[in-house]
Amino acid sequence: MLDAAAPRPSAAVALAGELLGVAEAATGGPAAPAPAALAAEAAGRAGLAPRDLGGVIAVRGPGSFTGLRVALASAWALHQALGIPAAAITTFEALALQLPAEAFPALALIDALRGEWFAQLFAAGAPPAPRDAPDRLPLAALAALGARTAIGFGESAPPSGLVADRWVAAVPLAGPVARWLSRHPPVWEPSLLLQPLYLRAPTPEVRLGAAPDDRLA
Image (cartoon, rainbow, N blue to C red):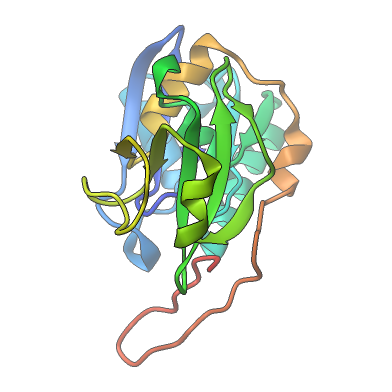
């Protein structure tokens, strides 16, 4: 499992619900390790070489424009070079997979900046079932979706003004998602690695003394 959509990239190896190896970046952005390096580190901690992997899954967005493309390309390279199965899931699906059945209906959220949120509502299931298409919404519109739980990135407190019974902060993604998917294998569809999910075109902003902000906002 390889993720560079979350604020902190991560990779994990799991088998039959057991987490065998995890590698997590201490930070995001340009200072974070390359996704391929994280994948190799996670496999090494599991006592495996990349050729021993039974498949590779990557998160295809929304998220950092650069991070997503590098992670998807890394997963595609493993698929092509090793001949292993491959698939990709959205960031919304990766968030929803971490919740128990009683948490649904649940709203997966990603900060789109500029006062907006990327959001998708899910019902309980294995995997959780989308109840609508991903959308970009102002915070005030989220309450009308009727979620019992909201899950997203960030600290322990929910976004100010969010209406939900429970808020879950999820970071990083790879460990819990790899554990879930090792018990519920996805449909192996490598072409998804070539389909990053963008809900808004990237708009890099160059600021003095700071790296470009390439979050899909």
